Length: 297
Image (cartoon, rainbow, N blue to C red; front, side, top):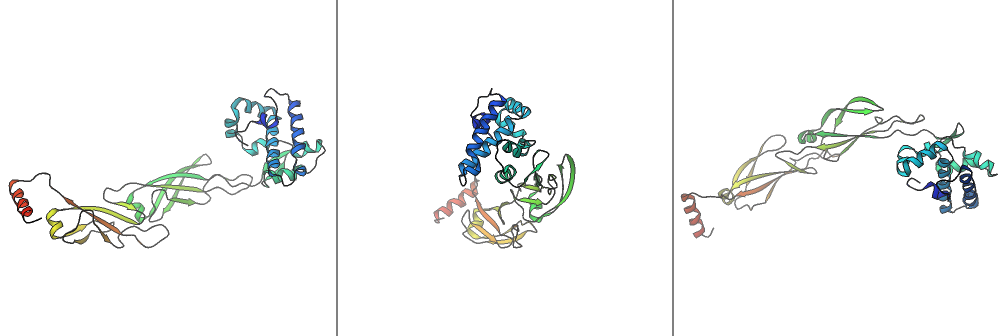
């Protein structure tokens, strides 16, 4: 019930005495007890809410921090386990002549909680996952390989050699099992996630497994056709640009792109053709263009 007002939940003023808080809780606990409201989910949520409120406001230290920091900051410091630590749930209901305290608590707040030292604590819990941003080059992303990464785990600096699979892209996530924070109460460690950020390339752009490169040819070459050398990630290839090609046309080189994650097949390379129009002509060039214009070109 983070962000809710505990005083409002129990219907008491903020300067209410400990006895007033206890009386308000007992009255509401009887009203919303699950044994009296079987199958009523709204009553069950209200019951959970008032128990959490009472666990905080009945503890002088927790109440002081709640009053000092407010609901939002309080819940950033206190987990649900912290809130119910040392709270004698079963004893509270025994005093009220109502049994089944521990069973009700486990059912409402999850079987992961168990009785411990007069209060409740969670059973084995998986540790928190960690994330680390990893910057790699465009061509390294295409080829894959190994990378040494450094990160902090459980307050200590660690280094780990990880495999970067070929074809990773911006936003790809690599999971390293068991390299997150330690678990609690005997639980397993969390995982480490590498968030991949791929640098731009001065030659290629990428869309999934496909690569794109732009080449500019002269007007005469567009009219007559030309043989053109284009780069790939491995070695240059020569393509034939057909006569009469239009600006913006893409010529496809099958299988010259990048592998995508989970596939051994490569995408394609697309060569986008641009036609250069000179900004200035000398006298001889101008005469030739005028002749072309007269000829209908």
